Image (cartoon, rainbow, N blue to C red; front, top):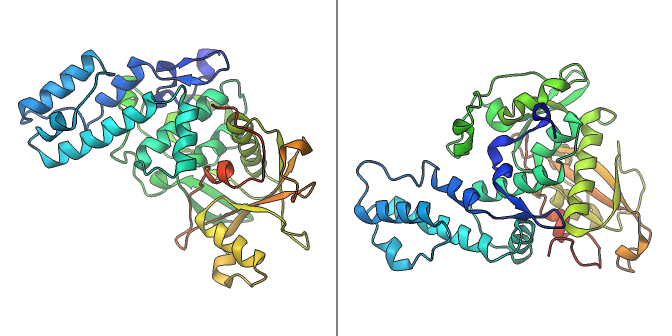
Length: 338
């Protein structure tokens, strides 16, 4: 990849190795990046136990850490941070790849801090989209790991990064690589268009482009492509995903809510109840998913399409749940990431 087409540098993808199948392998350098986070760097007043733990892991980020070593840290907040970090590191190291680590979290419903999950999703997407040259697809992929604030503009539904929309450029969970790489702070860049798409790569870590999700526009179809890619990469299932303007009279034989609110809407339709009007009004995305290989699908679904629904919260925030695409589809085959 040429340098001017690199993107999402701050997620640390360049610190990771790949196996023969292109899956992500944890490296010492990737683990050390966590140790540069503000939550883990010992402050001047830190106790000797905290300093020793941090220094020892910088020397060997895979070394065993005991509960007593963490308990010896004087500051309660620091102890909690280290407990979460070591649990997360141990989870990553128990798996052959980051993809496998993610799948276990999803399927076993393991509780993990959202900042870790977001970075994991971003790294997996960054790896799988390495050859992507479509800025609209990359911008749509941001929605998998960053909540969006939606606004209605003339004839358009515009998604903007929630933090950017709130005028916040630093959530307190910013990757330490952001500063180390000298990446500039986020600024408002307007809505992504064909005319501005070439600037996406140099701005990709700022998350400051809006995306038009109106059906018929590039953003809506781009999100469908990201969904198809995610399913292919993690589950080795080939699908076609098409944005729709309305459900009409199609039988809802199988559906997946891409957000919690959308799941409630799908449940109401499935149970032949009218979804609450206010709730139904939050539906901002509807997709039809078809499996290219019928043998991938369980028998009771057959050739029927799967419908994907996305809806906002009451305050117009869209929080996609990509894990639902792993656990909610009627597939029978084993995943690719094992």
